[in-house]
Length: 606
Image (cartoon, rainbow, N blue to C red; front, side):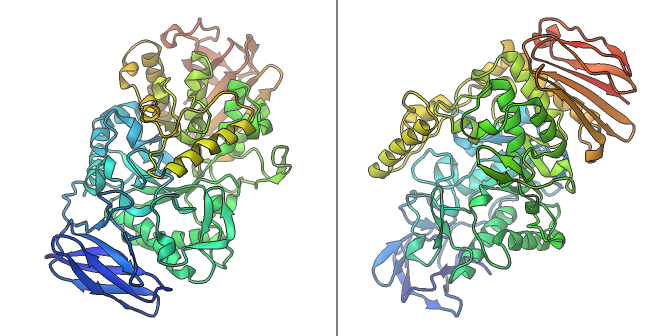
């Protein structure tokens, strides 16, 4: 089933609108010649018609019950913003040049999360293309783009999207996005899109006027919950599934990152994500390369990634907040909010070995038991990071790790992320220690909503006992402040850190022990008091032994595993702007070494 305005060629277009509770719908063609077309409704609540003389770019709206004039909730493009008319898009007029592209296996992925509006000074899809070669040279395999569904104004994180099918006009619209994906594939990079199926943005979304897109049975942190299990939910489910497949089919995305699925509420016998997984399986059977679904969730629920035959939701991977929190608290010492559940080397060891720290164990912050056992799932189903848009941008001042820890601490964060057997994710700019913040910003046209955002963020940070006033989210200067300063990567400690990241990725790609898929081949040791952690990993005839000193004093390592080892990385060496190494170049089993403060040392055997 096609929904929305589907251009068929030769200036012919199908229009399909879901509105099961409407009594009357008229399609109003605004350009090039004004026309009115009453629509007929089928048994499933869809209003449809096919028209000639509708060229690409035709502006249109719907008149509902003879009164309200509204854009299409399934619009492919909103050239005049969220309140303007919708436009017909010819999805077949783009000259794709990625016929030879066959994707990147998920377990081989190194993801780079970026926000189009702050990734470059121009803030467009076209400008992002100019930086793909830099990401490829770094060793990135996959870029993950924060949401680009049409939002109010010109600047936003993207989670206020009002038209899930429409590509943001200020970024370059449909052609700009297709050009970016096409160029990425030609450069050998996969592309994942961040999509939001737990809520709609607060401004410009008129879906309530068309039908029961929302349910009062649940509430999300961002307002009303989307209706996946109440009356008329079949049309909403179809809307979401078609949207997901639309991005994969029409824009050639390699996968989708599903935002905050813990706020996708569905009490039905078949969860919407299970249905989406089933449909993706069907899609992949005829696709030239596999597409993936990656879930963001704070539930620590392994059922999310269990296969459908094993009664799981069938997601291919999910984010592991526990790894981030364990690493962040060791590096910064922060203990506010949910960080109170973390802070020990033991927890980092658990997160490294098991992906989750809380596996039906008691969480002091939640004041309840939390999480599930991951031992039946491989590490390559868990995305881990030291920074991401949420963990940076939801701080009052948007500080990155570069503003919170020393240069040596940044090297520890890089090594912990890239030597881990999970799927590493880097947040744009972290590879060279970008020190500009990543702040929260909006461009709502509703003055009352802007003020509500300002007051809401003040209350949010007061709850975290943060002093001061958050930067004005509605200010253009807030966006500019958050934009990457690419020139920094070419000199000083920024360049050294960039080289450090690049070298770590080379080691990851060279030694299969780093990406071992067997949890039984991961052994960890730690000392909470001395603040060190070590890990020994094996895969076939390859092994690594890494020792992390998170403390401020010299430590004595545990005995080396019983092999002959060669040192391949030492963050205390002068090439990495360290204060001088103490660990020998070669090492035999059972020998112990001294590790300077805030240092990581990697030994390999093959």
